Length: 180
Image 1 (cartoon, rainbow, N blue to C red):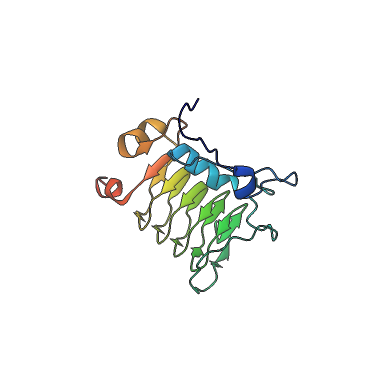
Image 2: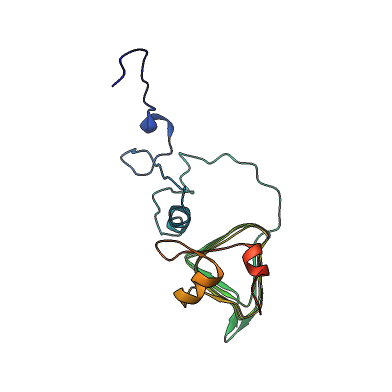
């Protein structure tokens, strides 16, 4: 392959995060919306390929000291809950339900909202009665009250960027263009 000079292949198995007991390396290309969403949602599995809780492969990061995540309200239809989800510090889930979602810091999710398979970047605010499914929400987005995303593919395609696999990307510019 190389006639002059030298070719060096990266030794992923020696430098990448281990993904299984067999010490195979974990590597994911997250260069598309589908791949990014899938890699994040995979973290919600009981035993994901990339185990964030593996003490033999600690993740070194800078983490600001923030208050812990908070789940409030315990009434029928208005219960702050998260199932098979990762919720970062400084988040408040106020009478909303999360399922198989990954929520970054500073999120506020208001009552009667339901999120399923959502990747939410930092500082997102979700208004009451929102229904979000199979969505990536950009940093700082303000989701208006009653917004539904992920139930009507044709409507989603008119308002948001929809990937080949049906994942909706929602940015603040897209929200600002909605006529609510």
